Image 1: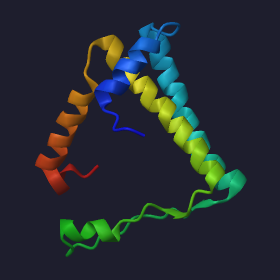
Image 2 (image 1 turned 45 degrees about the vertical axis):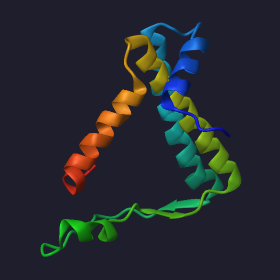
Image 3 (image 1 turned 45 degrees about the horizontal axis):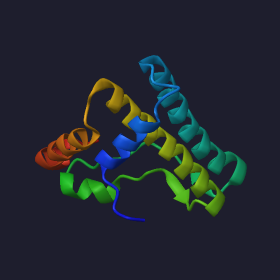
Image 4 (image 1 turned 90 degrees about the vertical axis):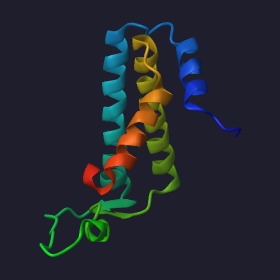
Length: 131
């Protein structure tokens, strides 16, 4: 696939955004898409079993540097997405990105600019971003 920019994607979304152009439609569709991402992850764990969640309290030693925290903090996730769950999650994430682009388009925001600003904040704050 050719290199796709955020601008190209947002322009395409705007072009096809006809039936659900209302901000209320876009907001509710975004929320629905986000819930479907959560559901796809839950199904990978509970229905398929290709992923497993082993959650526990994160332990942060007092004498550890912020740089070393990266290797000490875990995601609580083990396993690997099977092809079916991978496809489902990619589809649902794609729909979520579509609705983010739609919200940007109807509010006059530039998705590329938002990403660039967030990237700059991330780089500026570095480890202190802690997200």
